[in-house]
Image (cartoon, rainbow, N blue to C red; front, side, top):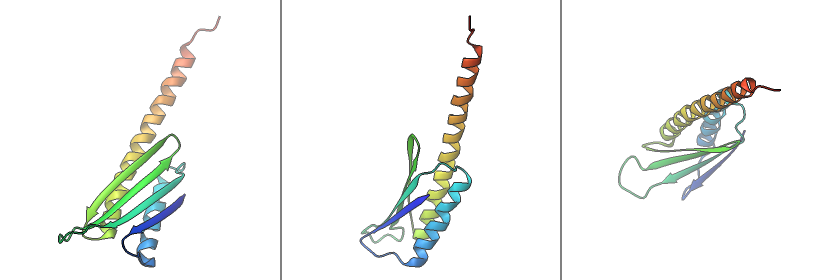
Length: 113
């Protein structure tokens, strides 16, 4: 899976980029057809401690999944966003399997003269 990381209004260090890469690579365990991921790291201009935003866009054949989290650190926001995407991937896999199974049953039930 190809992962691109863009940090907006700051420069992300290699440690953070490595952390994001490691976490995103774990999604391949749940679904092997992931094409790419785009990660956006943003600093919100507020006095609040939770001003770090991670947005992840996951490209899968036929669908695009998205998660956005805001926390005190980019690591925490990335963890939550990856967990949200994992649940979305599981749901997508279940829907796809159900559709395929229903189609197979429908084709099998058609009487051929």
